[in-house]
Image 1: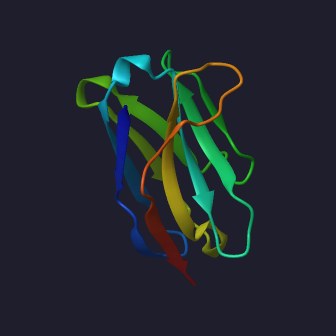
Image 2 (image 1 turned 45 degrees about the horizontal axis):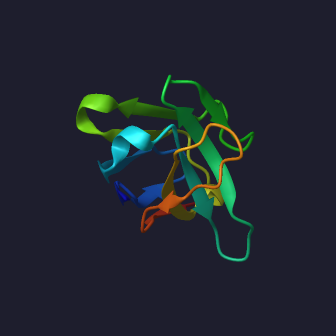
Length: 119
């Protein structure tokens, strides 16, 4: 089993920055890809960013150029640095992980951390 615990959410003004953290514990050696989803009220869940074991990254168009996903293997932690935040970035952000590189199902989810961007 894999456990994911997020932190770093909070209230920030439009244009501000936040760094979300996700500590991974359990059977981490089976994890090949990790990412961040977000869910805003009344909106579809959105996959924001992903990072593979080898460090390859991918971003949703909505955050590309403003966000950076990274990992610190020594700390078993994945980060999402978000800059130039907008009101529309307000959502609950979930850390996700999966053992597959293809046909990813996102088997593991954290409890979520709230990000609120005020105007």
